[in-house]
Amino acid sequence: MGKSTEYMERTEKVILHTYNRFPVVLKRGEGVYLYDEEGKKYLDFGAGIAVFALGYHYKDYDQALKDQIDLLIHTSNLYYNEPLMEAGEKLISHSGLDKVFFTNSGTEAIEGAIKAARKYAWNKDGRTDHEIIAMEHSFHGRSMGALSVTGNSHYQEPFKPLIGGIRFAKFNDLESVKALVNEKTCAIILEPVQGEGGIYPAEPEFLKGIKEICEEKDILLILDEIQCGMGRTGSMFAWQEYGVEPDIMTTAKALGLGVPVGAFVLGKKAAGKSLVPGDHGTTYGGNPFACRAVSKVFDLFDENHIVEHVRNLTPYLEEKLDALAAECGCVKERRGKGFMQGLVISGRPVGEVAAKALEQGLIVLTAGSDVLRLVPPLVIEKEQIDEMAEKLKAVLAD
Image 1: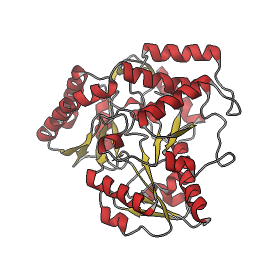
Image 2: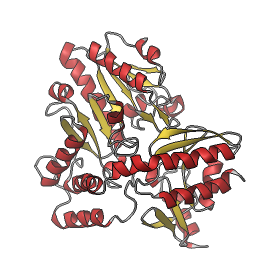
Image 3: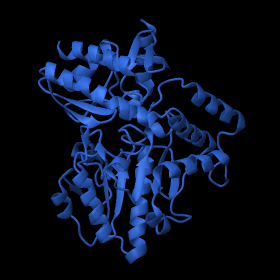
Image 4: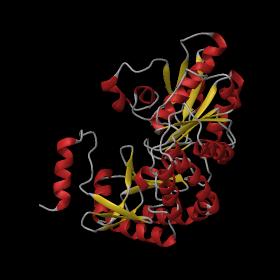
């Protein structure tokens, strides 16, 4: 029995089986490559599900965390700390919004956003029957609140009843949203680019139309940037390219580059009339270690022009993926924005394609029932795109 087999068997004995993991034991990473226990090399176009935006062992990032460990890891939110201040300032500066609440995950950020929206509405009229409009095929997390606004009945069914007052509209169908708006509606939540649902970018007219509804009816617009934010689509946050500012934004994943951290960020209107002391809290959220990671991430993005790099290299990535779609009969289409791309697979299980890619030394993900998802580190260069295309072509042409 090799080490990998032993480790997998020992893991299955003690870890609750809620993931169907690929039969690989990853040991270390370097740049945009991962290595397994046997030393096999993998080009990473999954980035830990869009987390490792700068790749593995980015020297200045690693050093910042080591330095913070020597100072202070945790204090609780009963006290101030410098990294919390710096991370908050940088997130506000890059988003243009007003106030931040740091969480431990994207799911927790969604929970906070839902609570903020309901408190905002409660402050207006004192009612507790407010409704939230979410999108079909969306994904916002698996806690009871986040699951309630996730538009996938397969995920929801075993856990009902979920929180009430959630109604689902069709993504990119403005009329379906308008049909659900009523005097009880307190928020509309959506992803500017749907991730788990199949890599569907919002149409500009759709997003702008929803913003107009929210402004007219005093409804809060919640934009989930957990996967599509932090430079992935060619803007620091995807909504900035659309020119549609949310009242509340959620972010996580690449926000901390692997350190578990998320945030919900409120504009002035939502911040001024929603959560107050006693309404929301967290023991770990915003601790010095996580916030040092966030602060350093923004510094490195700025110093290395990461967002511009994504914008400049996107046409080349799309060109290579379009060529694959044209050459390989099982690829129906490509869709996506920036370094968040999907290939729609027809005639064979998409999970099988991802598994075959892994055998070729290429890590890719899936989304929805038929989409191969590519969310590489944002620091990839043309040679890695070429390598990806070559490996994926061998899989798709098989």
